[in-house]
Amino acid sequence: MKYDMLVILILIVAGCQKNSNSTEAGNDNQFAEAVIDMSGLSVFQTDGMTLDSIYAYGGGDCFGDVYHFTGNKRIIVVDSLTCGEYGFTFTHYLLNRSNDIQAVRKLKWESIINNDATGYTHILSEHLYDFQGETPTFYNKRDTMDNHFISMGHYPDSVSLKFSTESSEDYQPVYEQLRAQLENLWKRELVE
Image 1 (cartoon, one colour):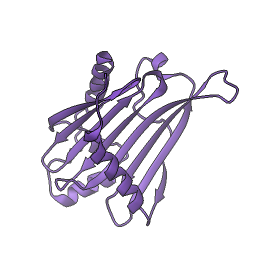
Image 2 (cartoon, helix red, strand yellow):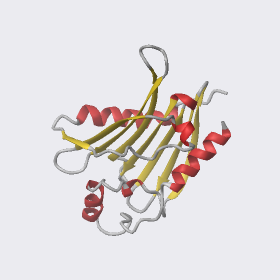
Image 3 (cartoon, rainbow, N blue to C red):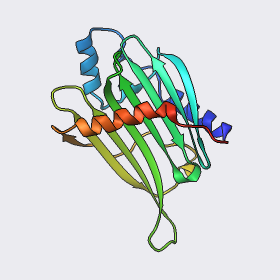
Image 4 (spheres, one colour):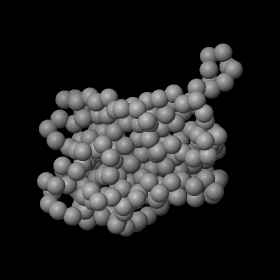
């Protein structure tokens, strides 16, 4: 299990390569514009940020770590939950310095047994929630994978399809659900 956590940490760090579109410098308007342009997902990169804490949780087949990073004008919380061959969920929360959620990215792998019980269907989904601007926008993409990520030798870092977008006037329930999930991250227990 410690090997799995090391692999996850390496994947997170590898995914955080230096990007010239840093949102650390500049005024708040520049920061908001960078958050709205989520196409490159650079807003979730942790280069130049301080890793404040790591919190471990889990039991049985599922274990996770919560990483808390702070920067000049933002906070990033990364929840990396892995459940062995059953799948994983990696969630990135982008917060402002007042701890308001600005954006959330969820990458999830599910292996679901087929109806005829002869095999599994592997589903990789990616969801982005952008709470900036007048009307929050949600981005989604989902793909069925031919091979399990274990046989690929790595965790996928994105779904290779285009996002479908949806603006929502009634975003508050989604925001509140994500806020509750974020707050509950530090209440999970580690059972060995």
